[in-house]
Image 1: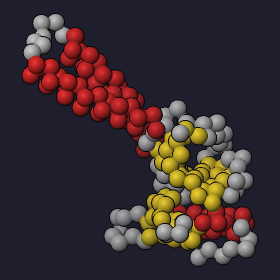
Image 2: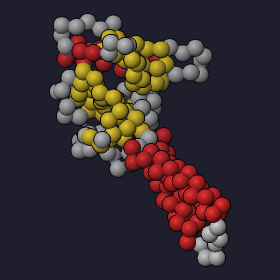
Image 3: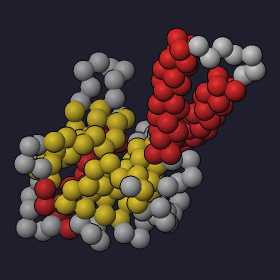
Image 4: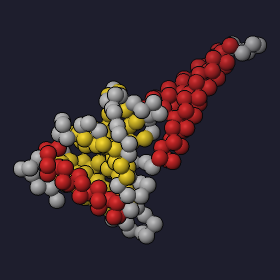
Length: 195
């Protein structure tokens, strides 16, 4: 289900402080959820997940090929159960690394869509959610309850009113991003007014 693997992006255009990064593309722009330091850290975590997944497969292989092991029925049952549990864990780790850990929201003015995707360390994306601009009900900022909390920019869409988190950060940065999203939404669909 990997899509948009050939996204060509320009250099990042900072909207504000580290929390939100806007990258312009030929079809629109992308709002990155993580700052660059966190993004590099997540790429290292993806590499560790790959190593962990392959290590578990080697462990399963060693469990069955280790010389001098006992092959009685109870031991074979235990080995089978342990192999299945380790195999499922290994496949989950590898799938998580393949999908990626960095989430971003893409505003596609050419196709009139908003996409939420996961990006991996090889810069390939996996589609999580896609909806048409016509489905957007509102764009709003959830403000901080505590002084150290971040403000969160959300989009409410669809008939059920599902909510997509776009970015989080300082309230003034989220306000600037909110204004940009509203302007672009109005430009793409002049007949609609979004509050």
